[in-house]
Amino acid sequence: MTDTTAKPVSPAAARTRLMLEGPVVSTLLRLAVPNLVVNVVLIAVTPSVDAHFVGSLGLDSLAGLALVFPLMMLMQQMANMAMGGAIAAAIARAIGAGRREDAASLVVHALVVAAGAAALFSAVFLMAGPGIYGLMGGRGPILAAALEYSNVIFAGALAYWLLGALTSVVRATGQVGILVYVYVGAELLHLALVPALVFGMGPIPALGITGAGLATVISFAASTATLAWYLASGRTSVALSLGGFRFERRLFGEILRVGAPMSLAPVLNNAALATLTAYAGLLGATSLAAFGAAVRLEYLLYPLNFGLGAAVLAMVGSNIGARQFSRAARIAWTAVGLSACVMASVSVLAIGAPDLWMGLFSSDPAILAAATGYLAIVGLAYPFVAANTLMSAFQSTRQPEWPLTAMTCRLLVVVVGGWIAIEVLQSGLFGLGVVTALGLATWGIVLAGAFRFFAHLR
Image (tube, rainbow, N blue to C red; front, side, top):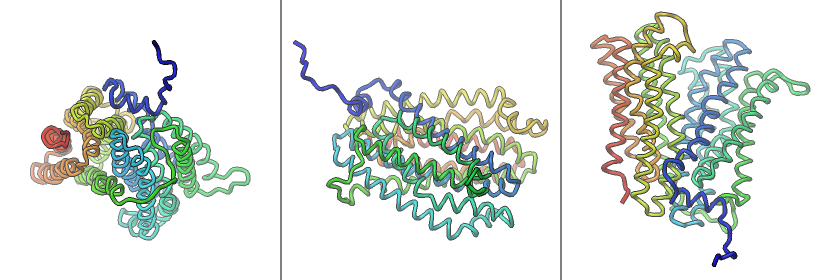
């Protein structure tokens, strides 16, 4: 006899069950695609829209924007991938273990951590901004433009950090479809606001580069408010609520023991890329231009990879919480395999048709020739970037030391190997490509080896 009194399974419970019991490949892909959309909006679309309209204000404004961009990206990487990954992993573990009260409390603790980090970023860049951008080469009108944009962005750091925390909470629940609507909707708002605030419209005065920063902060604040409402509405497996809430040191520890050290990860990654750029600069303008365009293909790999990495955070975290360790390991290695397929496809492009990529940036024969040799070597190492998904798995196992070890090894290879290639062997951009490839391979091998032998999955 059929039990007609059985209650229907809620979407939140169904998504949790899917992460714990569903088919691994299809579930990973289902969670990865919305996260990929979020990454594209954050890393590619929003900064490009600002740059497009600010470029109309003149070269000084565009150069000022370029000075701020890497520091803004550093903040976003810390908020979304480093601390955000720790938040998602902690909540996913609590969900998998059935600790619903802890999961709900972790949401509020995460917002407090995000607010503290935002206050730190605001204080540093509002007070030390002139010195920082001066050290980066900002002078005169360029420095003034950089400060105009930076002061708005970092005064609004709270919007960035709260959005990163709330996005990570939603990722932990596995109900990531809502993120596509929120981020795309916010970007449409941003697209409408930038020209209105930069050039003026009706009663709105022309604010110049300040308007571009203000439009970005407003759109992020709108996304934050929307996600906060969604989590408070009870539609997910954890809710944002202050009812009966109290602070607990152990819950702050759940987040900070992983998030604080992992905040070094984007610093190490950017240091490796900055070091390679500095070595390329020693080779002359042609090599630097070729390297600068070619290395952008590597930048493209990280948001592609993090789409799967965000899915790994939710699935591996929840399965560890449920003590399904063998399934958690299988999920992590499956994600590496899926990512390797994507990275190998990019390798084919880099090695077999470099002009398709380089043609987006230059038609100079000397630049194209230099970049072709560089990409032919580096492209061979792109599949090693797939192991980067294991960084998310290590966040779930609460072992941030291994991703940091892998990234430090890569940085050492780049620093020492680059000096040998440029100063000792004088092998030019081709030699720098060999060093870049060895750095990526070292990073991937150390991560994979550490996960195979030292991950806490038992």
